[in-house]
Length: 390
Image (cartoon, rainbow, N blue to C red; front, side, top):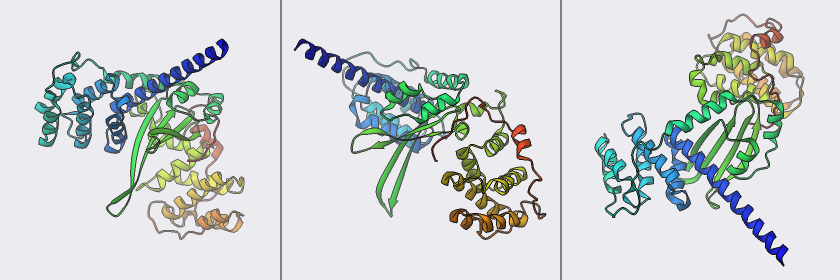
C-alpha cells in the first residue's frame, strides 16, 4: 500500500510539473506574440483566448498586454481593433490594477471609440493588490532574447532529424524536445459562405533556424492547441526570422541572393516555396528564370517522388506564365518524355505572351548548376536534413 501511495504521489507530482511547464511555455509564447503581432489576424487568436480562458488572466500575461497597449496606442498603423482587443484583455482583471494604463490610453487615444473603451474598462473598485506601474515590463527584452538565440544557433543535420521526429504534444513538450523557438507566428483565417462564418482556423507556427517549423492548430471544442505537422528543411523558412530585417548589417545575403540560394539548394520545400513566391510576383530576375529552366531541363526525369514532382510542376507554371517562348522547347521535351501525368499536364499549359524575358530560346547547359551552387552556397552546410511537405 505504501508503494502504491508513493507511486500515486510521484505520478501526481510529475503531472503537476508537466502542467506547470506547459503553462509556462504557453505564457512565454503569448508574451512573445503580444509583443510582435502587428496585424489583426496575428493578434486576434491570442487576445481571444486570454479573454475567454481565466487561467490565462495572470499578471505575467496581462502586464505584458498593458505595456504593449501603451507602446502601440499612438501608432497610426497599428490596427484600431488590436488596441480595442488589448483594452478588453485588461478589462478582464476587473480591478483597479490597470487603471493608470487605461487612463493614459484614454488621454492618448486618437480615436473616440478607443477612448470610450478605455474609460469603460477603468475599475471603480477599491484596490485589492498593488497597481501595475507603466514601464515595469520591458516588452523588447523577449524579442531581443529570441533574436539573439536565433543568431547564436548552429543548426546541424542531427538537430533537423530530431525536430522531424517530434511526436506531438503541447508547447511545453515541444520546448522540451527542441528548445525555445527562434520565431513564432500566429494567424487566424475565417472561411465564410456569404455573410455566415462557417469555420475559424487558428494556427501557431514555431520556427527553428536552419531546421524547420512545427505547426499547431487550435481546437475550439477542446479549447487547446493541438500539434498538426512538422516540416524539416534548412532554408525554406529563412525569410520568417526577425533578424532578416537587419540582413545587411549582419552580413547576411540580401533577399534576391537568398532566393537564389533556395532555388539551387536541392532542398525540395525550399525550391518549391521560392518558385511559388516568384510565380506570384510582378517581375523576377532573368537569372532566376534561366536557372529554374536549367533545373527542369536536367533533372525532371531524376525523381518520381510526388513532392519533388510537385516542385518541377511549379517550374512549369513559372515558365509558361512568365517565360514566353524562351522556354517552349524545354517544356515540350518535358511534356513528351515525362512519365508523370501531373508533370506532363503542367508542361502542356498554354504559354502566355510576355516581354519580361528575351525572345531568344534558352539552351540547356547555358547555365551550370554546379557553378550556381558555388556562387549561391547553402547557409547552413552542417544542416542538410529535409522531410515533410508544405
